[in-house]
Length: 211
Image (tube, rainbow, N blue to C red; front, side):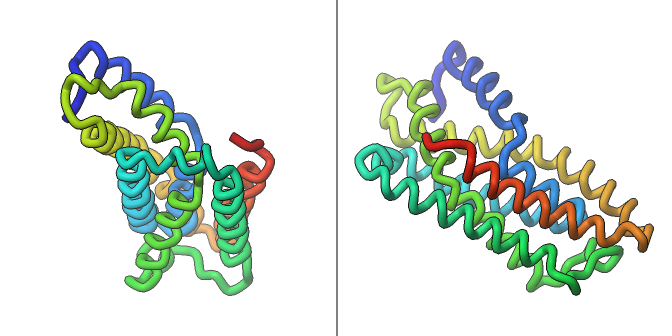
């Protein structure tokens, strides 16, 4: 259930601008695509989309309001997410992580791990919950029916826009990664970029301030 066209068009414009603004999800997908190929990037996108579905459902249920009444919960989730990203960064930078042509086709267990990491990275970002809880209600119209259903539908539209944007990111970053993988002397650079990006996102989230 979506709002009428006069309200839906501004929503599409605002959602598109927000999606194409680089953030943790975009950087995670780009770094995975660069270091491990298009397939890894696509699986990371699936994980982030799964997390976004959960966030959309949370917005529909009004769970974002929990952070308003329990600020400590916001901080706990935020710092758990930061710690998780730092742990992923360390794992990517450790010697022995394979890169190169074989890494462009990760094993099934590796793809499962990437999906899980991407989903957790999205879920452990409380700012996404706050965004969904504050942005989506601006475009809901109670006269059209159940507001929760409208909020979930709008969240799904954002996921669709994000998917289109991320596919371009995956293609570009994966192509650059494939070029690097054919140059053995630069393979370590892929690990550094992956770990550095994850660590950089964690530092960014830590110092980007509170809500």
